[in-house]
Image 1 (tube, helix red, strand yellow):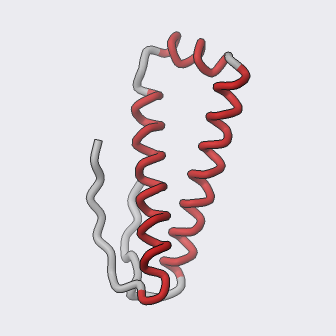
Image 2 (image 1 turned 90 degrees about the horizontal axis):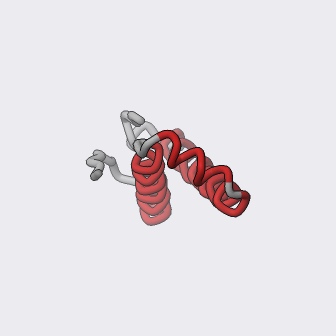
Length: 85
């Protein structure tokens, strides 16, 4: 899965904003890939404590990247005009 997004001029936030946006989109893509598997396979995988801990860790990283994107976008009207997930 690939994503296309349109961005504006980010000034001093540019490098970190793109990094956070890429991180968020990549993590979301992997989440969709995993959750599109057969339900029994997903349930067996998440039933393992190490896998579950890893999944929650990735979810926290996703939410931090998402927060960073929203925060940078809110800093200026010239930033991301639309964020669609």
